[in-house]
Image (cartoon, rainbow, N blue to C red; front, top):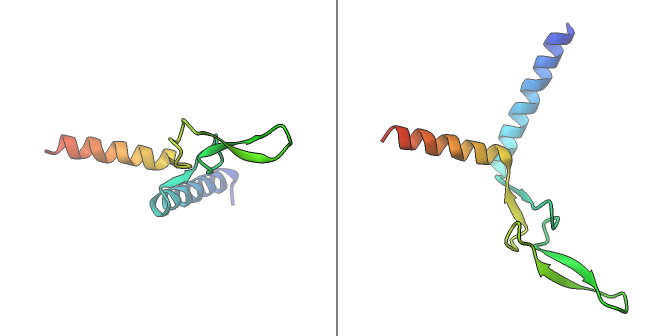
Length: 83
């Protein structure tokens, strides 16, 4: 296999894998709170306690994936353009 063919095959397989991931699971964990929805704090004795709600995900712990967001934008643009 030539390197160019191998690279293009790898690129196509990674793209299709990510597209299937976005279709099957459109939401991923929030990168700021790691899917918990809030921060972890410790008190003065060292015990862990719940911190403030995450502002990025609004305390849900989930975020929309980039690929799913792009799909939603394209679908909305197509739907609005064909009305």
